[in-house]
Image 1: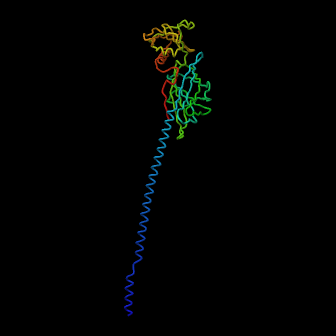
Image 2: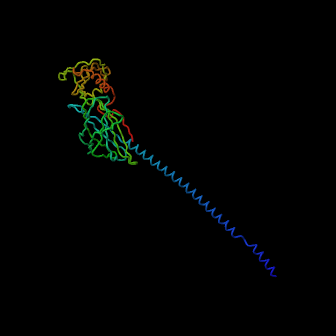
Image 3: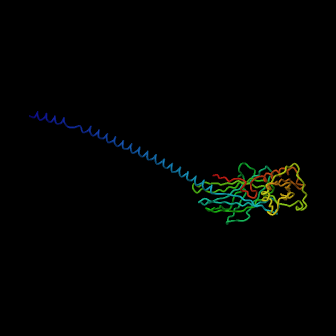
Length: 338
C-alpha cells in the first residue's frame, strides 16, 4: 500500500511544468519587444529630426532669398543723381553740383551716408579739389572730408566721405543738397557717387552708386558772340593744323546760350573762355538742313601752342557727344552693388 502511494507521488512530481525555463523565454521576448520598440521610436525620431532640419534649412534659405529680393528691390528703387550748374563771372574753375537722392521703395533708408570719388581722365601733374556746401535743402546738410587711400580702380584721384551725421531718406521722398566744386586746373574728371545704407533685412551694408563726368565745357565760360568785334579787342587767329568741326545747332544753342531770337549766321562766334585762355568756334557754313554748322577754331595768340591741339581735341569730343553737358548724370548710367 505504501509502495503504491509512493509511486503515485513520483508520477505527480514528474508531471509538474518547468516554470524556470518558461520565465526565461518570456523575459527574452519582452526585452526583444522593447528593443524593437526603441529602435522604431529612434528611427521615427531620427526621421522627424531629418525632416525638421530640412524644413529649417528650407525656411532659412527662403528667408535669405526673400531678404536678397527685398534688398534688390530697395536698391533698384533708390536713384542717385548729380546735376551740374555752371557758374559765370568767376576766376578759377568752379562748378555747383546738386546731389539728389530719391527713395521710391516702401522702406525708409536709415543711417545712410554719401561718398564721392573724382579721377582725372588724363594723367596730369598734382592738382587739388576743394568742396564746400553751398546751401541746404530739405533741412539736410552733407559735409565732406577728404579720404586717404580709398580710390576705386587704382585711379590717381581724390575721394570725399560724408561726415558729421548720417541721413535718413524716407519712403517716397527725395533728399537734395548742393556742393561747390573748385579745381585748381582745367581738366576733365570722371566722378562716382555712392549712397551706403544698412539693409533692413540682414543688417549688412548696401550701396547704390552712380558714375558721372565733369567736362571742360562745364568748367569754362561758354557764350555766344555775334562777331569778333564784341570780344573787347581780343586778337584771334585761326589755329593751324585743325580740321573743321561740325556742330549741331540745337546743341550749340544749349551750351553757348544762343538766344532763341538770334540766328546762327556765318561769322558768329561760340566762345570758350577761362582765366587762362580764350578759344572760339567761328561759323563758316550753315548746311542747307539748318541743323548743322561747320566751324573753324580761333585762339588768342598767346594760347596757340602745343597744348592747344590736345585741348581742342577734348572740346571737339565733348561737342560731338550726345550727352547733355549741363547735366552730369547723363554722362553714364547708374549701377548698384552690395
